[in-house]
Amino acid sequence: MNNPTTDIAGFRLTEHTWMTELGNWIDAISPDGRRAGALLFDPKIIGLPGVRDRVVQAVMTDQRLVLGGMTGLIPVADVVAAGDQVWLLTGQAVSPTLADLLASGPVDPAGAASALVETAQTLIALHAAGITHGSVHPGTVVITAEGAALLSERGLTDAIRGQVSRPERDAAGWAVLARGLAASSSSVAPGSPQAGSSGSDARQAGASQAAQLFERVAAMAGTLGLAAARNALLGEQAALPGGAISREGLVRAARGRSAFAQPRAYAQPPALPQDEGDIVTLLHVPGRAARPLQFGPGVGTQEQRPETTAERIWRAGRGEASTVHRPGGKRPRASRARRWRTIWATAVFAAIMAGAILAWFRLGSTPELVVQSIDVVAPKKTQGCDSKVLITGKVVTNGAPGEITFEWRKNLDKEVVKGSLRTNSDQTSYTLPLRWSLSGKSNVKATATLRILTPGPVRTDKASFTYKC
Image 1 (tube, rainbow, N blue to C red):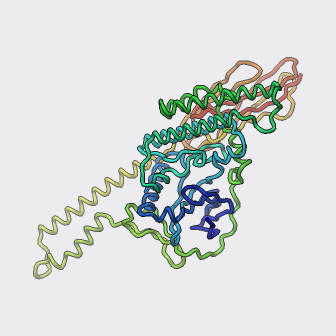
Image 2: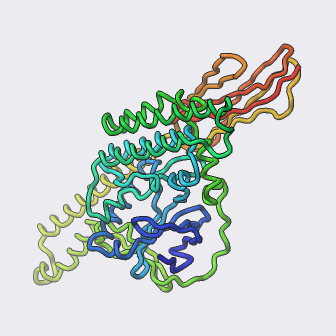
Image 3: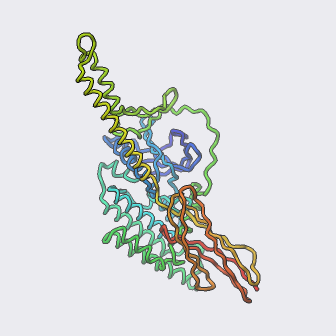
């Protein structure tokens, strides 16, 4: 399918495209310069009776979930129609996917475990909300620049097929995903030492243990459920190379695979006047009862909101005026009283409902705390006799309030420094310091490892320095 334009509803389209069952995905840049995605639906699919309405309904369900704090889905910015074309626009890049990483080579076992834990957690949350994904496979698992695993195309396959998948279908798809990562983990990465060396033997042993773990949790997903499989991954991290779940390998693989997984956003070129024709949003129109928003030359952008109950009563009262008036132009007193009571009752009900909706938004819009990345830094300069070294761990969150529990481990002794940190809703970056005192005559490499225990999954990073005395 050819891309007919370089811009749609303010989203700038790139040349990186790929085909899926739904249509043509395209990497895009949002109007504010962020990495995004655009899906041009296959016209043979979206034109079938009822498909477009079901797609819109699925997207609006996702938007309500994201508004309520769910963080594991690719957020959808809009669904728009341009003539016979229907586009889905996302607020997050949709590449690279786990399928892209698997096609490039083996996936780091610690990163594979992180992707499995995060996708399982998202599916569990979807099932708790009474809905399913319907099409879980490596092509719908997107890896972000921070190594997070997000699910895309939620509910779209079911929408085009006119069906509702059961949670067991999601669990089966996740199990297939786990088995595929098990096969990847058992492969020897290019550039590794030749077989027979001690380093290669250790690497093979670690990969084999990880593959066995992934096979076990795949079987558990089908028998005991996704929650049991996720808990097994979290509880058996020692089977992974390095002994912990980590996003580091996913970050390196994603950034090496796609320009859209780089840490900085694309530079947005100056906006040029462009005639895109009439672009119609298909969202914000529950039940299609009101006229959709119009975009394009000479077309207003104000949303046509539905009439309130009080407005309908007021308009109906005006229309009835000429038929209920008595001679002389006076209404019956009882009729006027009933009308005023109805209007006042409606106004009070509307105020109560507005307060309830506002309270729901305030309660439901607070997301759960998520640790997005950690970075440990140690001095590069060799430390001399009786040194006191400051190791710094930087933790980046999604800005939600909550508590982080962590521990520091040192390779030169068995001491474990544990701690906790309360996060604020207006802050995303925190510093966790470790002060390490060394003494005596020695020439060693000291390594400090920071482990973020909660919120899960467990994330680790480490840094080293040289002590010489």
